[in-house]
Length: 110
Length: 118
Image (cartoon, rainbow over all chains, first blue to last red; front, side, top):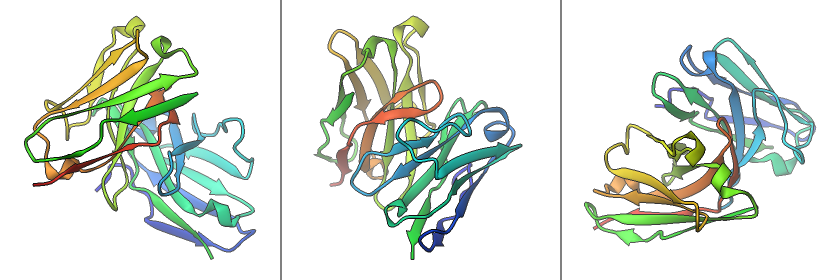
């Protein structure tokens, strides 16, 4: 059971907008920035969003992140088939003195 | 920018194994490094990190590996290591190294498979 809670699955049709939530507590999301990673099986994970809402160069602006209080979310607009992957939120936890990952959300493009 | 993990193998429970992460294309000595793993069918799990020498080269570990795993670095060779002792079956998985930007991980290596089984 992860300290950061994500829905295990999400789905949408091409062109739709989907959001993935990540819920934590005051010692992690509540006091630190949140990052999001995309992971396709057999490949290296890739950072999609850092510092809550910043996109690295090369990441399409279809991906956006936000944070409020002890929760964060990743939004993907204009869903494409290549977005089918596992998505993870992550942040620092000051109580555990370490990095936490959410349990991951498997996104299916129908 | 490239990170290449090596050293993954099949090992018996209770034995030790050392993984290496060889870096190129960036200033390794100025970078903090981290290890993240993924057990079969499970999500990503942070293992630990080592800060750059400028910040003391100190380490942090997940509770699940603390006391058994040790991260070190050789700045002259651009290599980060993960020494794993007293291995358990639940340590089985793909181990990734990544640059820790004191908040997010980027880039990541392709991973190396560790299987702990008798």
